[in-house]
Length: 139
Image 1: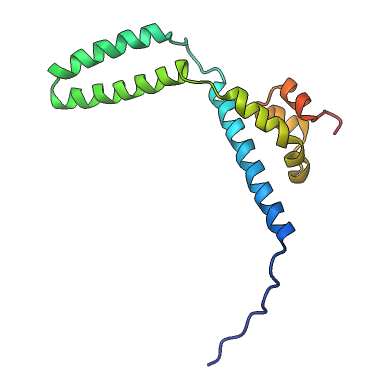
Image 2: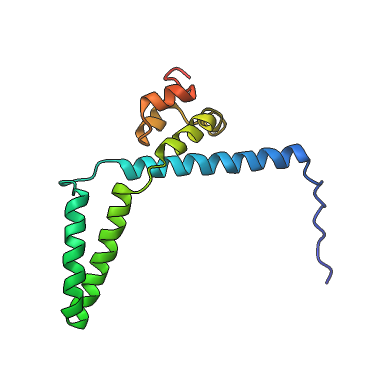
């Protein structure tokens, strides 16, 4: 039995390929910024100071040497968690860089995807950032 032939699609134009690439890049910029904003959002409970995290790390490293295998496993996980938390607190803050990139693409991305001011605000984007991006309440 002969298979039905599918009609051949015309080749994509260079302009179309560039528009798709631009859309993918804008999407990446927006996603990275929103993830960073979400990560910066205050969490419940008291924030730990870097010094207290460092003190606990020293204590955990000492306890690991003498712990039984199961306790060692839990201590090693705690050590990993503490190191990651410390990196987040004192590591390089590239939110400024992500914000600048976001400001450049947010308006075009929002217009293309139909995303309004209120949706951006609900996602955690500060009003002053939207203003810099040219996104207003009335747009």
